[in-house]
Image (tube, rainbow, N blue to C red; front, top):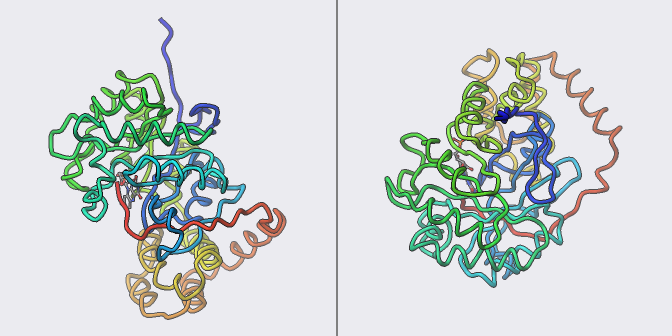
Length: 360
Ligand SMILES: Cc1cc2nc3c(=O)[nH]c(=O)nc-3n(C[C@H](O)[C@H](O)[C@H](O)COP(=O)(O)O)c2cc1C
């Protein structure tokens, strides 16, 4: 019998969409801005996702928005994730996302946040035999001609096995891949992701399954890929301020950035985020990223505190360059490289509100 040996760097497919590695960057509300997604692709993720976008917000077009979502050529293939519970509204939202350039539409069925579940969206869609969830999938799959995927948890309650019913139903309704975060919604992020359940789902469905949860090292990525038979692994919290984790998986080598490299990457991230969100919003938005990045390298503890007191991103950059002077040359080289790549004229500016609250 032929043994199917999979590597993290294989090309694979969801429907007709070709994905150049088995490393997927997770959708994370308040994190998965365009700068994060582009960085993910640069460091080896084969697929990146938007954070969850409210179908209702898209429908009304007047929701208070974080920003307008842009899709650029260098983040593709890109999945845009939508959430909601009304099949017709979800279908309309999916159409808008595809028009704007989404390569895949992912439906959120994992969000455990009450604000979302009380509307019948998120993790509630896998309960009650996944009846409503299946109707949502069918409506969205009917509405768009790009592949539709579902990201879900094991169920709402602890020990739930609802995913075994929901998974096959969603595939029957038209889902072309499933992502499983094998925790219950009730668990939120406590306990651990039980990837024995991922292996069960792989056996139950004929479409690719993506494993999400607690994959924070190259060793763990290999282990989950091998023991579950999943098509790809998804990295969430492990990639926050640490794109080098993706590079270590893609290159199958240990990657430890120097202080200069950490600062250069953070400055690039800051600059891209400022272009996306504007300076004022970015200053606050980026604070959590500073802490995440400065866990790499060997920085003084006081640097993070200092950054949290600064009111402009220019002041943050100056403080970072003082801590790692060699980063200036690296940033200059990066900027030159970006300029040589062109003006970003292929960017699509989407008139899409991104919801502020998310999860899965
Ligand atoms: C801050 C944060 C925001 C998240 N937002 C989303 C989201 O918008 N949509 C979604 O499907 N999952 C969301 N998730 C769940 C992640 O995609 C992922 O499934 C989960 O964090 C487990 O993976 P990890 O252990 O690699 O972080 C979020 C997780 C975090 C930590």
